[in-house]
Image: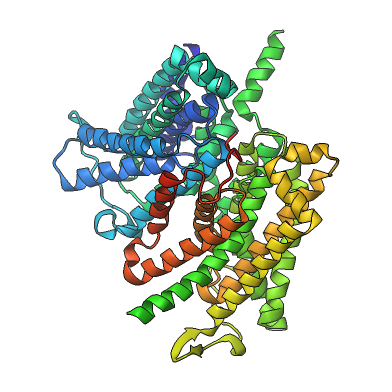
Length: 308
Length: 290
């Protein structure tokens, strides 16, 4: 529980630190939003050992669904967010059922393909999604009467969601369900031989990660008040994989570290050069080649050595 | 109407052959090395830009020869320097590595050649239309079909008829066995990666007069290429060909008759194939599912 407490304190004081660091509150919100995405994704990739390259689809689908409801209906914010998350959850169940039998890189390729399907639908279904232009001027509305219009307030809203996400992930990891996920990662065949219905657990992990992505996606659209096709792109799916790797796969704090760092870096670089893809690409390559265990992985190991 | 369909089928076959050239490289690299090469689209882009660079000096046809050579060499270097050290690791790592490389390559192209698309026209000899009976067809597209068909045939002959090629195929089924038999499989890996890169480079060069030359051209071809690999069945040469043709034809027909859905039909096809044949059309039982 110490990590949760540390996270709560960090989230609370972060607005005081971000401005001296050259950031701004909206950037902080963005960092926290992607942390939610990565926390869920880590349950799938880090703990279950399943690589998906298409979870941006659920991120984007939830954002679009919520955005459309906020624009075209009188639903309150919470209901629109919930609807967005549910829509993404249903999509994840359907696609998951179709592809969960596949393993390893075959599975990864299928997730890329199906993820990209959502991207193209968003691009082409102009009458509903606005095509390439996306949905703009999405109203933020109020949450249970709470006004979210100021950047600081909105940040604290995302921070509370992020903390909740971390608590949920913590509970999942430290439950017997989480143990089964880890067992699947370590040896799927043995896990099945013991009698666990491996497919159902994998599907559950897939859908849980999609739900986290969906929550993150609704927050992202609320932050920008804008939904656009690139939120579903495979590049974004790749980004969350990279966040998990940079932070440290299969560690609790890894995805949070990775998401905040990558988002901050992304923002910083794209401010200074239009060739941010180049710089990010080099960062990925360096991490994959030389630091595959991620920041949290190395920090944990250093601490273990120090204690010995 | 019937002619429009026929014409779109021809366009589709041309696109399909390009996709097949892409998919062969992807699928053999995948089968043999267990590497999902996300940078395969970037190699295609580099092929097209090779033509852009050498076009003024050498003309179109020699440039068409230069592209696969240049890109093949790039492929050999990438494999030797970056990919080889991390084969032993989880396939996730090579996938992320090539993902990073794809990002780097796209921006490098922007830096070297700029953001603006290059219009590319086929040489005099191949532009315009050819009358078959009294039906007009685009000469260049027919040229693309003939050249890619010849290359696919060569690749197939290499894989199926030569000692080296058969070793490669054997490696896609069981690389441990191949290694145990005393074959230096690492050399095989380098060779196959270079060959795949060369085919991608050639596909990009061939595509340049049809689809235009722009920095994002690689990321727009990589998805349909992946779909072709999955539909055809991973590691299958015939699958890459049949998958490429069916995807190419379906896209071209959709562009004509249902343009809004032209990108999405591919994925509908993918879902259908997976429902009926979970391993793809020619997927091998057991391969890549362990």
